[in-house]
Length: 205
Image (cartoon, rainbow, N blue to C red; front, side, top):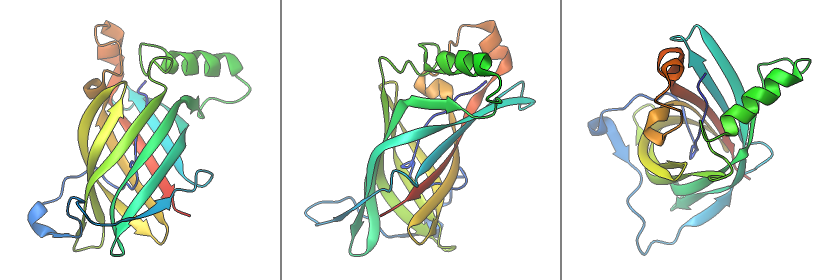
C-alpha cells in the first residue's frame, strides 16, 4: 500500500496533477524581490490533508489523514504569490480500517511511520514551499513549488481550485522520488503501487 505524503499544499492548493501549457497561462506572480507581501495564516483546524495509497494496480488501497503543523500564504498586490506548509508526519493515521480492528490499524500505522516508509523519528516534518503561482484561462491556479519529504526535495507542479478562502487540489507523487519505500523488496515492487495520492484542502483565516 502506498502511503502518502504530502504533501502537500502547499500542498496548498491543489486539483488535478496535470501539467498545463505554460503558453496558455497568465502570470500573476513574479519571484519576490524587494516587494512587500502580506502574510495570511492557515486555519489549522479547518485545513486537511488526506492520503491514499494503492496496491496491485489499484485493486487494493488504504487511506488516511495527516495534520498540518503550521503554514501561511503570501499575497502581493492582492494576488497569491507564495507560502509554505509544514506537515507533522508523526500525525499520520489510517482511516479506512474499522476502529473495531485496532491491531491492524496499529500495525499499518507503525509500518508507515517506520524507516521502510516515512521514517518519522528521523524526519518528523515534511514541507512544501511555493515558488510560483500562475492562473489559467479557467481561473484555476497552477502552482509550482518544492516538496521536501525525508530530507529529499523535489519540484512539483499542480493545479488548484480557489473557493473564497478555501483552496482544494488532488495530486499524485511518485513515492520513489522521495525514497518512501523499501525498493529492494519483491513484495514492494510487485504489490505496492508507486503513486501516492494527496487531497489537500487549505482554509485561510
